[in-house]
Length: 237
Image 1 (cartoon, rainbow, N blue to C red):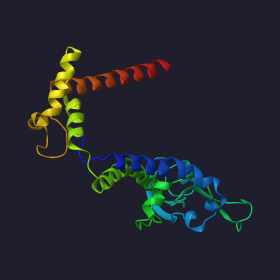
Image 2: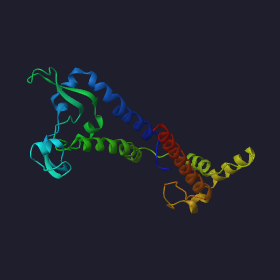
Image 3: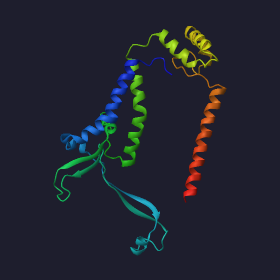
Image 4: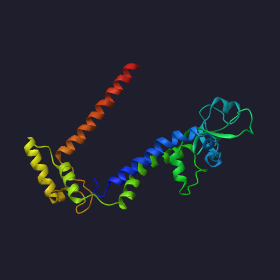
């Protein structure tokens, strides 16, 4: 939906993202030097926090509460967790002085973010997972925008034909369809009044009746699936 997008940007984005999301997370755990590299064995700092919770029998027995369910404040230790590796453990669990080693998935997303100078030592596991999620969602688009800005734009005639075909509704016959697409390719200005951002390189048209019906119908189908899932779950119990 963006005219400024370029082919080199798409190719580079696919290669870079495949490397970060698929190759590095599976490659690094298989390399002994990576598993034992001190910089990659970083962990978060353990923290002692106070939580408000309902008392259990053990709290009553310990004198921290007078009854089960009573609201009390208890200390809770947030243990250290691996920043880059899923786990950081001793090679010999019985020897507390043995060498540390990274195990499990290598979080390449956090590794890349650390290049920007972000200190993850004070983060908790939930925050690290959230950072990976947002990186996975946003980084590919940032790559597309950044690389497209520094590469040659696609020829306007090719873009006009592509978006003309994209915006043209299917016609009753093949001949009419070919003629409509050809007309749209030669007159891209015809779609300008329908664009949300007129005069921009964004080819996003205002939704029409068919779009609204299709979108609404899709959500109706989602609702049907959820209802059927609920029915099956109820029957199962």
